[in-house]
Length: 202
Image 1 (cartoon, helix red, strand yellow):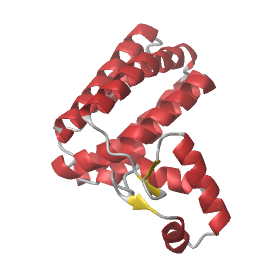
Image 2 (cartoon, one colour):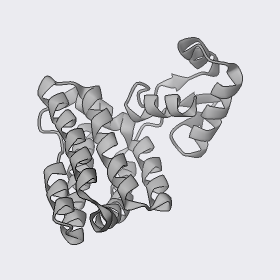
Image 3 (cartoon, one colour):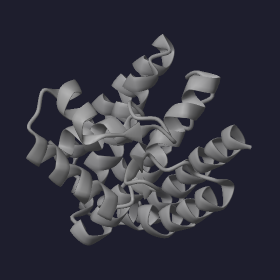
């Protein structure tokens, strides 16, 4: 249940500012009250949801200061994961990542916003798994939960044209086993994505 609700937040099925109720989720997901309650408690602790007066639970609405903080945190962490991945990546892993990136490109061409969000997250998750850094990866996943709904809103505004994608540069760096190039390409990817979110919220 936690993973189901996490993905609903991550991929924008629950929008920023949208109220969330236990009963509403029980009905929507045909789930039991207890697992929904426990999943909500965990997501609130992670900052993906928040209480707002009268015991209401909502998806947080990001302001520009929050986006800036998230960008700072992502830039501090994600290039390090890319650097570690470049030190550990083999040809099979690069092939898998290229397949994921091809699905992402197909989603962009089709104007499939959810497909883009899913494959973009999958690409980063696969890279993080290669990095073998569970503490850093958990921190990064928490950040993604916080900005995911806003990214969905921005993509809904502007469509899939000009979406951030430095993945080719990341993949080339991984294939070349070049940690510094991988870190720099990831930094560019993060900066481009967060800049787009800021522009969409301005």
